[in-house]
Length: 218
Image 1: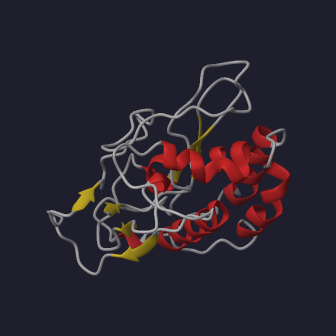
Image 2: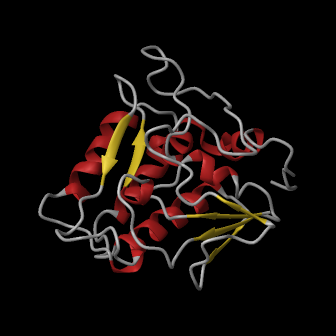
């Protein structure tokens, strides 16, 4: 199965579920123009009062019609220092946080200038930690209409409605750090699943799939 989607700042569990089987291919949209109000510069994590957003600031200027590979990250505010602190404060008590934290925080020590490069780097880190067997590729040209054998999720997943699973997926609850304070929060970034479920995360991603092969092997 091939899924086409824009890059995210730490992809959500919905995106990662499409990499849970050997035959899956996730194709990052590399030839689009940047769009505001999307996952390209933000991710959602758990918080004591509900969903919390982490946002990457961008260099001043007009980004909407700018090719995604030309969008630059701003460092006027030290987001690359505050985001790790927020993650540590939020997930410090998660069962598997300590196992992954050092490796994760090293990514923030020297983040790249380009949003595209950063998003790919953190996505590859997360996919590696989750041991997802699916393949990744980048588009070579922008096609307004995707091929018939491709599930086109470009701009289909919106931060305004993260709990809504895309076609072929379903909500599968797992223990979260603040489950004693609020109901289960579906559709958060993959860090939430990784820190809370650890080695079981891949099985949970399999369980989110409806009517799709689950692959084989550990």
